[in-house]
Length: 200
Ligand code: ITT
Image (cartoon, rainbow, N blue to C red; front, side, top):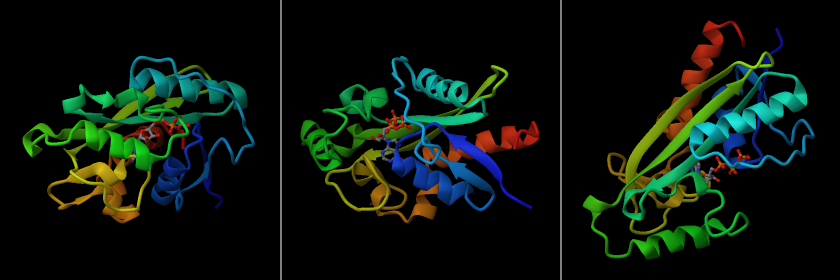
């Protein structure tokens, strides 16, 4: 039997890799690039949820199909939850993460571990062609690391320290990260909803 198709409204290859790793055995995963879609989506929502819905709806309207989207980010409590919903745009969209990560560590230099609470947040939205929308949320709690470590994952992973693992999420194997990550939690909740509804 052929696999069912799941369309993700994302241009972020790090996210696509994780979705393929988590769902690829069960589903055929398509990113915007896989579909040859090059549409500009202005993420002007004020919350992860608003932005996730915005992306899913834009691509649902362009394709006429059910579409999933991920809006996610890194929150550092000491920085008033920055970069938060601006995580991709922090210091400029095309700035390398080595520079973004170094800047965050610099802004928190000397801050003790008790004040370094941080987390990754992910909202997955699903937009159906009939206009219905569903969302799920996943959160992974941890600390801002004292130094960048690890080359797995993407984005802010090298500076996100998981005390119970004794390493950063950038040092976890992909399957280890997916088992506990904000994205893993949110997508598993969403797939449960979609399967229950018979949508996938
Ligand atoms: P799309 O909108 O095309 O999906 P994007 O990268 O612009 O891609 P977001 O607006 O949701 O997506 O920004 C999410 C940013 O948060 C991402 O670019 C990373 O900087 C950060 N981020 C989210 N999840 C992460 C993870 O698992 N590991 C490291 N950084 C993450």
